[in-house]
Image (cartoon, rainbow, N blue to C red; front, side, top):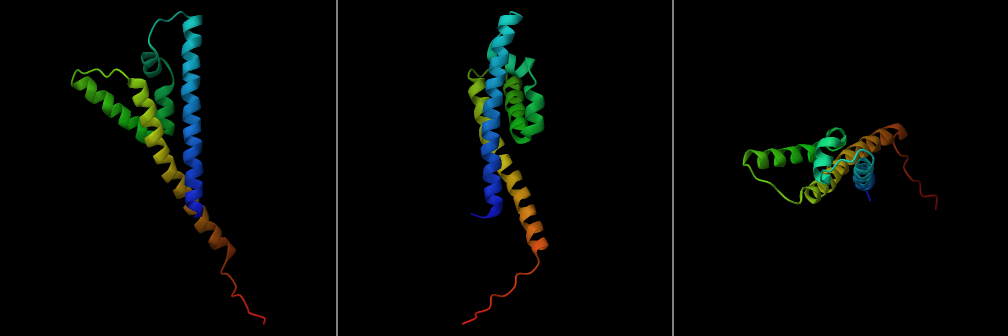
Length: 130
């Protein structure tokens, strides 16, 4: 496999694991806030309003965050509600964010590959001693 694809695949896998873990942390934060403070709101309202979710999304997953903001703004504009917002958020984050980080990681891998081949210098011709 080409070097940039390996780096891109590693970035995509790391992103999927990180964001999955981040959603678990937000859910644990929701449970702790419910026990400590006694808040009585749904997890989707807690996630979208009461956590650092949007800051993390805009910093790490710009494409997924802009897509989510666009979908939520369109739903608000048309006066519609969408029931399963958490599975939609999770799917958009994992699919678009992983796609985004595959290409970002691939670009970084391609840049390093080009840099490394430039540092190695030209390859010597192989001589046939026989």
